[in-house]
Image 1 (tube, rainbow, N blue to C red):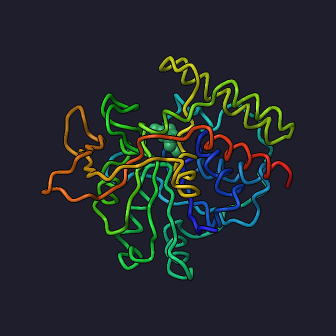
Image 2 (cartoon, rainbow, N blue to C red):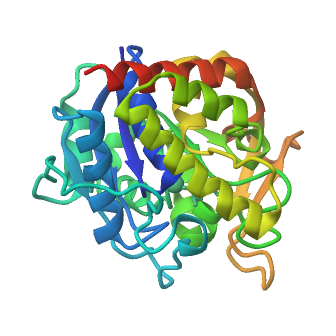
Length: 311
Ligand code: BDR
Ligand code: CA
């Protein structure tokens, strides 16, 4: 299995990234690290523990990371994910604890000690990853790839130009795209093809497990927010797309590109400026997801939920 560290800000769709990463046999999930984003760090860390508890994920360390973006104040997405960051279901007190120590130190230790290069999958703002790369530059060569959810080749979702994860911490994203580790960007182009349709909900219901029902509650809450805020007929489940790319690269068709992060635009700060036909002056620095095989994506997500639900 592929050794993976999942760095997340749960968040409804982050919860599905956690379940896919732990529930799919192709991944060896080394750690779940948390960052402030959809909600405060205290809430995203509690939510990671909640998901681990309900999904029976007991052997994977959960460690909290950065509580604030590198430069600007935190801006949360409580309009989408609610006051708790995971509105919808009712959770019991989690039985899984977080480990002590900073997420970035845990990541460094795991990356340096693992016999194989490790894949990082960030599904929140890139604050922890940027800190890892700047504080511990020697780890870049030990990172197989950074497969992130964030950005867009076109329009944003948090502003007309910027996608949420990049918008929350543009300086961190800039460090990651200009860093030494290879980057794959799974942005809105591809995650807007990962829609939790009524058929997906019916399949999760048909699993007839506690976890399947919890997934339906999460997606129903997410659906309400996306319908109300943006008129989506079904909500995009962004974050597990990055995990699916790691599991089976063919699930997400990517193209070589040059990605720059806009740091200064008055209306465009946090935008990913993607050159899909890089001019010789701009070297390719990322693979960018363009097309999702949504049938095999949902097959894998549902299979992972089913496997965890039977634990
Ligand atoms: C991203 O923003 C967050 O609200 C989601 O969890 C996802 O990571 C989508 O733009
Ligand atoms: Ca997220």
